[in-house]
Length: 375
Image (cartoon, rainbow, N blue to C red; front, side, top):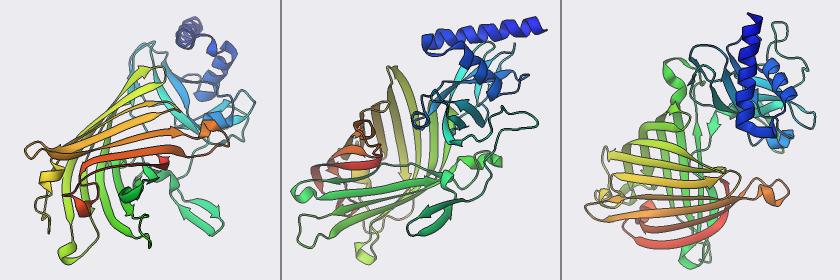
């Protein structure tokens, strides 16, 4: 029995060494096996060793190795403890992702991020179980007082940025977030439910008083459903409004379906494709012809290098009227430049109809540059 277990463990170590080459040392590999899961587990979690806590903030890859003789469906342990190369003890938590079926002798990847520096220097056991994050409020201290919220329930949605152009292009500001009201493991798949909100503002900085000439408000409710680690599907409802009343009101309600597929291009490069389709529901108030300009389908394509440049383009339109629009985003992180800045240099260009809901019939081409918090 012990001999068979030793043989399986040796084969798993050899498979991981073949994948990583010389980057992973045998002593750390053994330590990772002991720390991550109990000795009698069929699936072992083997993390890469980060250089420091700062490097681990970008995410740590963990390999889930099936040491058994049958396929196993496993997303990985929720938390693991590792030691960085500089000696820092780190507590890592798995990022949201699907459960993967791992073939006998095979492995799957999972991604973990730090949730704090581990205070317990012993591996998890019955006497010292792995720490778990309680489902409670997180208190945030700030210069304006203390605030509390379920911060880990917020997620990026559309890019958050501020960009500026010359002349009539003016400034364009956008804020956007998604909120997960239920826990990831909630019953009836309620953990897939999201509430999202996006607000896009157009600031006429070329005018003496600098007014905001238009604002688009876009709340959403949708289900974000993972199929595997590279494929997701979203189904939901979106409302777009210019926030005005009476004859100046323009609002659109749509039921949409969106799919996203990621492709690993190698060398830290990734391609994301996200086709989308929708149909309109309810009245379109004073804009019954908005369908002629927004159409019924759209497509987003993005190519990105990890911790590097990202180019993203979104197109939408109506094939019958041949009206539509395209928007390009180009971004690069400022963190590698120095100072640990959490911004991106961000360029944005738009051509076509309906950049602002107030002017959905207007055909414009505008380019701006600025900074972004998310991309």
